Image 1 (cartoon, helix red, strand yellow):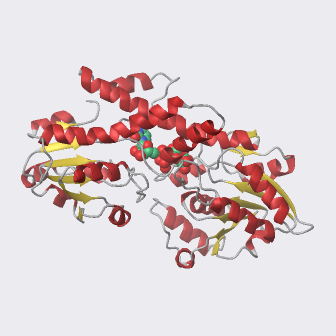
Image 2 (cartoon, helix red, strand yellow):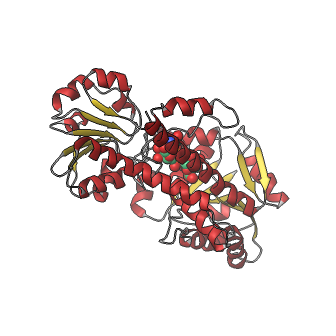
Image 3 (cartoon, helix red, strand yellow):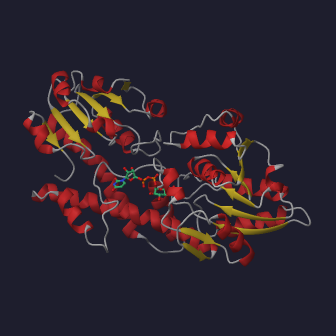
Length: 429
Ligand code: UGA
């Protein structure tokens, strides 16, 4: 089949590369010349393990083509995916201008019969609007079916999540579109759930919000464990063994971040409010998440007292490992609060420092992870990168002024650290 993706963020670029690898001819439309020119050369704008190789391989095989033009990509395509961003506006609602603008451009370029599907996470009801725009803008003679196909991939494991998802959700009640979309997804061995637009849209928000809820639950259990002298990791392991609960997304830490959970929880609260339903459960999920970030600063004060003039080294800035994404990373809040308390911050991240620089003025970024420990009064781990797990702690010990460690992601064994002479605090243990 011939497919077009409009948008080359995580979702657009990864899914395009995977569908090209399945043997389809895939166009990717972007709107920034520099990015599109780079993509043509196989230079990708994001850090995602395995993606650059996959993109290069499929460009070489002439299955993957990047362009800024809607023609000939749209008229040639059997299926067109909208995969542009929906960043939150101040109210928590999603900004739909990119999705709606792109729909208009696609509409004008349609030819023959085309299935247009949205991958972007959009509030319930948006897809009906998009369908209307397509119907209004399409040239005479062109036919269009519309579907909502939410994406469930995670940054850092985006390729395998796309090739081996837990399910494919196809939101379309049109049998002709269903048939084409089922065929397109055939190489993916996962159950297919067919439903209407609204249900597909809500599945995405409900899934992300439920995962955020699990994390906030884990963070609440962690806080309670600290107060009770229990080990939260064992408590959560113990409850996760119950298959009805499951052991995933129950790791406590400095809180969830990224471009999805914070945004989607906020959006679902706002969507509910628009329909006079107060989703107070999710408001509490947000509060707990905020507190999980705050607790890192409270622990720092507990260890050092007054933070003024204290030297704090931060290991990890990205919202999670294997990504350079800094969107709503817990590190932004934590570092801002520590700085407001008067401490001096030195920070290191294996790949996110480029993106972090603009967000964190006044921070000393270093390119060697051991440099964060030099003369430090406290070391804080905020992202669980593998290289931090392998840190030479004896070397760290020699470098630090005071041996305090806050392990915001529980990557170290408390006993090992304490035996080495560190004053160690994790999350929930
Ligand atoms: C999330 C969902 O997991 C994907 O299914 C979804 O497709 C995606 O959002 C999206 O809507 O596009 P992502 O944000 O890439 O994916 O990353 P996750 O691996 O879900 O992690 C999100 C945050 O939760 C991170 O800050 C991570 O550190 C935190 N987390 C995760 C925890 O604190 N504890 C856990 O047990 C798991």
